[in-house]
Length: 134
Image (tube, rainbow, N blue to C red; front, side, top):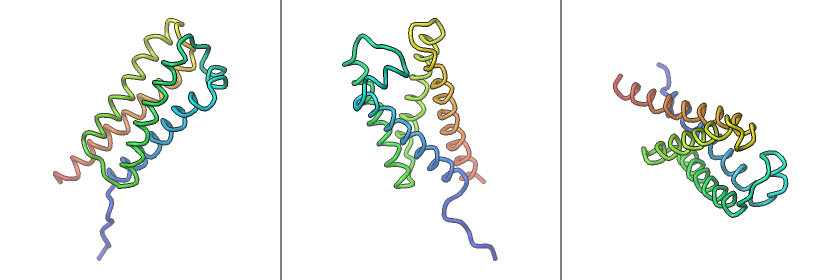
């Protein structure tokens, strides 16, 4: 008789996604706070540094929520909505303003990653629902 694994595929996918997404947000969020000069060297100069730091803090807090969920192996719908919503909101802004040159083209690379992350969350939840009904 095969031993049943405690965590199924969807839980593992959600945990890995939460861990990566959380780590990415904490690192990039704190980067703007710790070294605004190197942040601007990569992302382009900014006029409103306070706004960059505000977004950095908000992204960091979201990242901490994802890391907490990964550590607990618990993915309440509120966390999933925050993860998908944040990723898609950032992607929308980055595509809108990056494609017309208002912000650095490096943000278009981040937009691709944000959409990918949202897709991973959606896939994990979708698989989890499939596993529950089968």
